[in-house]
Length: 361
Image 1 (cartoon, helix red, strand yellow):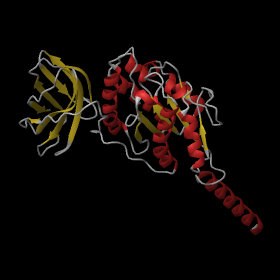
Image 2: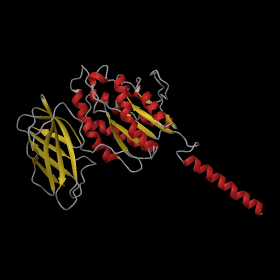
Image 3: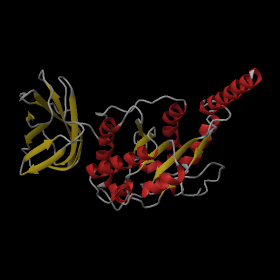
Image 4: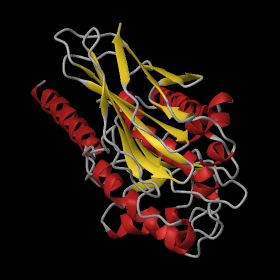
């Protein structure tokens, strides 16, 4: 009987030891971390930043990884794990509408997703809000596949194709909205990390056609992905840009802010953050200046020089004549005392500093 008891205890201890070994990331028995690069042709045709990133990870000691996806490698002249989900010509809005990601997730079961998506949507003049709604749907599908999914979302590289002179500013609008969207969508179990692929990227020298990265662009993209991905692989959560972070545009304005009189605890300030010939980027910050929480807010201002709003993010914006009305979206309406939310927009015209009013609900 005693021999049997000792044997049973030994067997249980052996099983526990094996379980611990499987659970420890640094152990030889740990399963590889499965990383899915997700996007369009910038990610997959051939998307050679993935090859450079793979090499950097290997050199940095992150060898227990597996790039996954239903798309096979497409060259790049160096050995690397080239599996991914880079689909040439794909729109993130179409992938979301058609639920294509669900099948890709079922086939590959990633732990981490690197998403650079939206270039073709910008080219097709999909609105920033529509693109962000697609992002949200894809993140929901990722979490349904893996509740602990780590999601790294790029502020996409700039674009300046000869057939789309408006695309450059559309990218600015999308990138400016991504940090705020990410802050509202992230969770402790499944954090979203924003990776700035825009700053320092030059379409004249880092692309061959104003859109797709060349060798120099691929090096810059890999260098931007590596630090946050390495931190995730080490068990940390990198810090994303602030929700008020903006991608720069050709020039900056020093226009002063105009403040509203608080209404129901709601105050707002307006300012022009960027200016270029024929257009500008504006920003309104809404603050709860009262002592009680508010559930929602609406701002109004009136242009004085024929300006119009062409795109907006982090608010539902409408314009009637010269009057612009903006209401909170689902994730940024509730504000505790002293808390604030910021929305932005692209306008045509010279940009001024109209007074802005704010009402709370």
